Amino acid sequence: MPLYKPDHTGLHTIAQCERLTGEGEPERQPEGRSGMMGELEPEGECVSVDTSVPHIARVYDYWLGGKDNFAVDRAAAEQVMATFPDILVSVRAQRAFLGRAVHYLAAEAGIRQFLDLGTGLPSGNNTHEVAQRVAPQARVVYVDNDPIVLLHARALLASRPEGATAYIDADLRDTGTILAQAARNLDFGEPVAIMLLGVLHCIPDNDDPAAIVARLVDAVPPGSYLTIAHPASDVATDQMAASMQKYNEHVTVPLTARSHDEVSAFFAGLDLVEPGVVQLHRWRAGTGHQGTGRELANYGGVGRKR
Ligand SMILES: C[S@@+](CC[C@H](N)C(=O)[O-])C[C@H]1O[C@@H](n2cnc3c(N)ncnc32)[C@H](O)[C@@H]1O
Image (cartoon, rainbow, N blue to C red; front, side, top):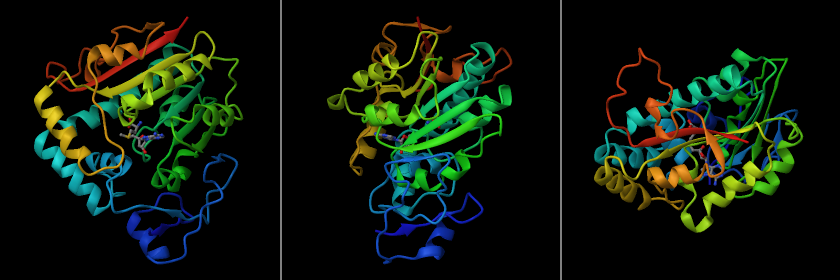
C-alpha cells in the first residue's frame, strides 16, 4: 500500500505525497493513529492509503472539485454521476447546509462547542471556520476514520487563538473512544453540537446507526444540538437506488440511503428546530435563495436536547 506524508506547509496534493514517498517504502503507522491530534503535530507521519478501492472521503472530494482522490475514486464518482447527475448539486448543497447550520448554532443558539463526526477532507467553510467567525472562542473536535483525512488534519487544526480545534482518528461506531478523547477538548458539562453530516449513510442498518446517535446524544447535556445530513431514499427514488447500487458494487463499506421517516427517527426525543427535517437545500435557505423549488435527495435537520 502506498504511503503518504504531510509536508511542512499544511495542505498538499496527493501528487506531492507520491513524490515525497513513492510506492514500496516500508509501512509505518503515524504516531497520531488511533489517537488525538490537537497539541500533537502530525508532521513527519506516514499513513497507508488503500488506492485499490474507492473511499467515500475521496469520492466526495472529487464531487466537490477537489484534487485529493485517486483513479478508482474518480471512476466510482463518475459512475454515480452517470446514474444520478444531481449528486453534484447535492454535495454542494450539503456543504452550504453545513455552513447555515453551524452559523445558526453559533449565532442564534449560542453554541460554543462542536463535535463534527465524519469530517471529510478540508473544504471551504469547515465547521471551525464558520463557528469561529461568529465566536472566535468556539472549540471544535473533528472525527474521521479515513487515513487521507488524517493526513490533511493540519488544515482542520488551524484554530483561532481564542478557540481550539482537535482531530480524533476513530470509527464513528467507537463512541466510547471518541467521547473519552473529545472530553480533553470539550466540556461535556456545557452544550455541545453533534454534527453528523454525510456520514450516517456509511453505517449499515446492521451496525445500528440509531444506537450510535443515541449514545452521542446521551453524552451531552440539555441545550445541546444534533445536526444530521443524510441521503434520501424516497426522493428521486429510482435514480438514487440505481446510483447507490452501482457505488456499492465497488466498495467495502456500502452506503445506505434512508427515508424521511428513518432520518427523522434519529432525532427521537429531541425538539426539531424549524423547519424540521427537510430536503437540506430548503433548511433556512433564506428568501433570496434560488433553486429551493427543485427536489434534492438529501435530508437535513437540527434538533435540540431538552
Ligand atoms: C461524504 S463525507 C462528508 C464530509 C462532511 N461531513 C460534509 O458533510 O461535507 C463522509 C466522511 O465520513 C467519513 N466516515 C465514513 N464512515 C466513517 C466511520 N465509520 N467513522 C468515521 N468516519 C467515517 C469518511 O471518511 C468521510 O470523510
